[in-house]
Length: 119
Image (cartoon, rainbow, N blue to C red; front, side, top):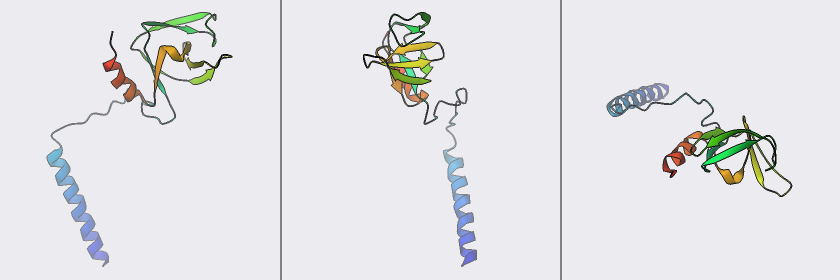
């Protein structure tokens, strides 16, 4: 009985190798440039406004720290809401309001949406 299981396992491995070899004409390349691109606990933002200003705080009157433009993909650091219950997202450069971005569960989804973004 034990020998049958071993033989079946070897046959399975051989068949898997042969079928992969035949189907191997198409090469799939994994992009490792963004190691957190598929991390389940990281969100990604796609800038949807033509230009958006990163704020020092979650307030429209707060100091502008930097700018970004439509189509940029950014890693979300955190999310919070202001006194008026408007959501703001924190990035390395500062805070952006929810109205300026779209949020995605991974970078790949954001990149797909980026291709469909109209100028």
